[in-house]
Image 1 (tube, rainbow over the protein chains, first blue to last red):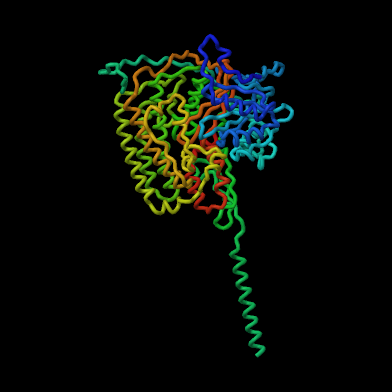
Image 2: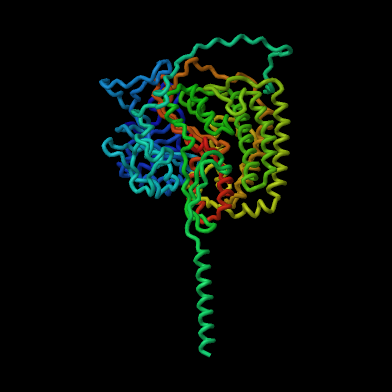
Length: 233
Length: 391
């Protein structure tokens, strides 16, 4: 679990990037409000702030971001499945490899702001007046893939949660209408999970690298003095 | 006397009964109308299940997924350069714009910066795809409402823009031109002068649309006050692009978060409107088309010289990390959340946030209580593309 260390302490040989005052300030306000339930964070200076909260604080975090920090714009909400795919992803493999049942599952390694579990709900909200956005992550325990709904805070989460439900199998407690969005009603399985195979590859094996001939050298057209089109300055 | 009274009484009761029968026949119950997947107004295969009482819509249930191609799963089995071919096809009308946020995310993770000439040309092509996309909307909204003429002007003038895109990239609809570190090729000779001529045509087109549609009192009567979206509802649902700006939200990612592209090098204006109705959404997009033509002209006047591709290794290997980049696409805010493992394969997880998804998610809220003809007006004014909605 990473904590909010400014990049400069790790890269003393390289010139330290300027600390991002806006996001550092936001992180301070968030950690004051959330206290222990803020489990991790990460800042890429000038770019983005990531925070990770406990499942009990999910709704409170949403309200905090919307009301106290001015992030009224709802970007998106989805889930990351951190398990490495057991299927062949190499483009040169001639067939979609069947997963080796006896092989050890790949080590699960989470990304920014850390994580402990295979499934992580993440959402992004932004402030349209101050022009920053915050990505919020939350772990889901493997035996209980459920989390409170954000619909009461951000109305737009309704469809995003429906999609996350059908694609990953995550239940959103309190959602008014949790049925399939894209998939037919009788569809079994959760397609975006890593252990759900890509059916297109099962039906037709990936052809791998196809024989490609090199492009013939093109002679320059007459009257071309080599100057680029419209180049100025 | 009693016989007369009796006859009058019987006649009176008869009359009452007759009236009661007529009322029973006229009484309407709720009806479910299926604006089925094949419908000229839904820009593709979107199904709207409308529950109607008389002419008023009581509830709407949009059913999507007819065009779901599973892009997020497909990106996991592609390498980074291969993903560009795939994501071109999300919003197929303004397709260069789809590639840009993904390429920018990969460049952010690789810490590669495209040379200035590449960034400027990317911006020019981005604005051209915006013009191509929105010109279609300007004509298309007319034809949804029954005004057939504008859409012919739209398709004709769009061809000029698509010809310019084809001259540079080789493809009208699916350019697949952006590369990590820059662009595939430089501009062909004579392209700049041609494009400026095309921008004049675009401006003429906008004037024609203003005359034909905005000046038409039928259009005004059918669009003003229809489908009003207040600002807080727009933000809660994540409406973006012209839909948000028509509700008064002064937010444009080109100005506020340019991500290295060249919008802030030229002078242009963000158009907003306070009404938030369908008329406002059309008006904002019309002004934005004019503004985009102005941006293209200004950029082409001052294009810097130099290479169009930075030094990147031949086999692209993106280091481990997560990046989010979103841009002001023709339909709204489109972004990619790219998670990589640093193993030289493709994205580990690529969440594609499309503008149409949020724009359409407001339909159950906004279509409640409207009349059936207004459903078409509102659906047309929200402007979504099915590829963008379903991915």
